[in-house]
Length: 145
Image (cartoon, rainbow, N blue to C red; front, side, top):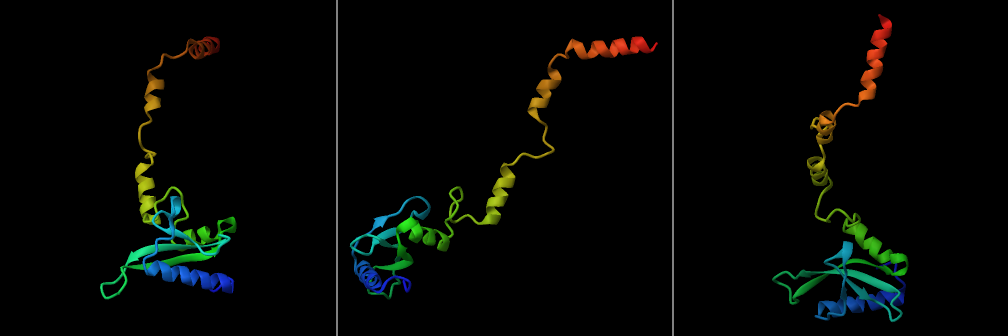
């Protein structure tokens, strides 16, 4: 938030305050940032915040907490890239809650053992042998004698 221009930072703080007090002036994000919401900060919608709603502690006077993940320019999706990096949601094919070691085990389980029998090899073994390779071998034996 400190990197935002002063007037945009003030607007962002007001938006956060409104959200804490129950405003639902945000839109859900999809894809890599499913579970998070975007908030338009300025009237020109050039700046955004990426937030996550969390349950408030029992002692709080509010129903929910607003967790600010990223705030910044929308240009070139900068704020969304920052949010993805901060939440470790940068890989399309891997869910965010999957650790790298677990993913490696899954890949190993799905991979084929190098010791497994190739089913296409048994098909080739059962195919009739071509007559041409046997004929030259017989003719060579005959010529050696």
